[in-house]
Image 1 (cartoon, one colour):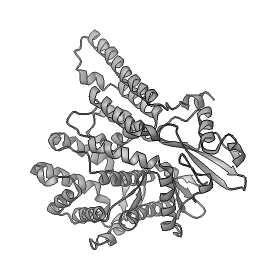
Image 2 (cartoon, one colour; image 1 turned 120 degrees about the vertical axis):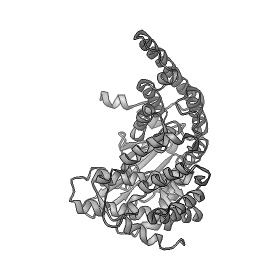
Image 3 (tube, one colour; image 1 turned 60 degrees about the vertical axis):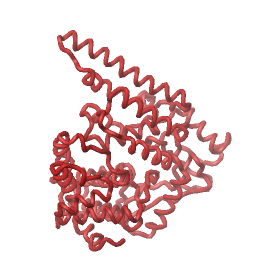
Image 4 (cartoon, one colour; image 1 turned 180 degrees about the vertical axis):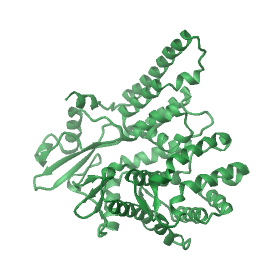
Length: 443
């Protein structure tokens, strides 16, 4: 019981309340600096201000308050940890990484208020059973099981109160905090990242839009023998609650003990889906959080969950990314730089040494699609190699930029697939999956 209570944190709903969280965060960081500075001075050291800002204690204060606020505040921290962590001070990057799988849950009173707001005071009359303990919680909302009066087994994705209304101000407040506390390198411009974070968060907080994405994926993949997609229940869905089928299955990241051939085939299906999303549907569920995938042992199907982070890609972007893949898999350095330019990297304007660095980054990041035959993700150690390579990036600070927006979300998905394949120890002929798509630039 105590552990559950410790996980419960009321979400501040008003702008003033949420601004207070930011102020508390900044105040905590400041007091932490004073305390750490006094400690180091007592030891005869002369600490720099930047060192005091980036202590693990201060970074934990930031991470804790972002997690408590949920919504935009937490999402910005997650995006920074996943997409720019190679260029953040290690102390901050390591602590922000906690936000990838961290969220508190609503107290029961706040949950009931949300249900009353959606269904009225007699909300309980709509259900034969409602489970107050959430199945999952994230940055935008939490998920609860329920049984309807006509015996439908469903889940309700219930949005945290105040999250949708606070998106723009939260992002602006967090950006200000990072700026005044120097928690990010001064030369790093995250303007585009923050702008797109606002747009993406408004999409994720729009449950009517998510329901439309859910319906679109069911229409595109509903007859596919490899995937299961829950059905949307419009009669119980509102702007702040999304009702859909309850889908059973085992968390996909826990399948390492399965027969290797089953694991390999499972990941083959996941990569096939990723390429289908990019080049055929041009609609991708970009949040590769492992919790969004379940494995059904009886059918070997993969259940796909949570479509709030879906993103549509233009035909132009899909063709330009195909151009990059073709250049990298062919080992064509000049074509790789030109393709990077078309995607928005401004690579041709950089120095020769930085271009060579960028070519090497792409070569490693897209290596699974370049090497014929089974690719062993565990032995390849892609994450470690990219992390080591990022150390060389410190020599090119003048060329640093946040990735182009569409690239950011696509690589978020690809990175998640790599991480999952590595965790499961999968071997997949990813080259064979990509090759048919790269025969021509046409879609």
